[in-house]
Length: 201
Image 1 (spheres, rainbow, N blue to C red):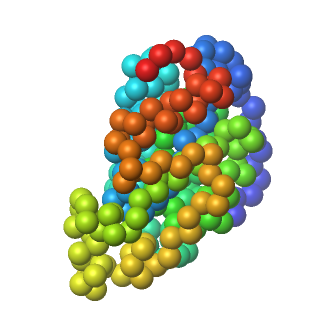
Image 2 (tube, one colour):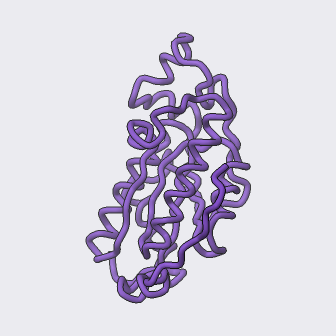
């Protein structure tokens, strides 16, 4: 633990940045099984927000593990630390007045709740990208389920490591029932209905 540190107040506040940007800022936390469509939807939503002039950034699970979290594995402890770090980074984006879209399996409810508690009440939007395991396995875009079934990957969520589905998320996107674009539009509709963003899409 660091000692002898004092929080330094910045000259530009979150309220100032939101006013300049003309919109709210929050974490859009996409959670779901591998292959459910988290990253794909997050990137489509990001492009739609960008086209509306809304400041946003995508944090993707695999991309983060190439840099910030490349020292972490997939044990329960490392998964928790992975999400803790992402939560802290996401909080900085919220403070900067942007929407941050995070696409992580984040299998444990307690870890997702930890991130929710880092920010204010209306700044964490849990989006459950719901898709049956069988469908995710059929898609298997990275070939990971096949490796997990063959014992080449250990602690793989949905196979030999649990996934704790959200109990009361702000949004549920059923990617086995709706197209990616339809799911993305559900997210934008939610943001607009909450008056977080304006404009047609």
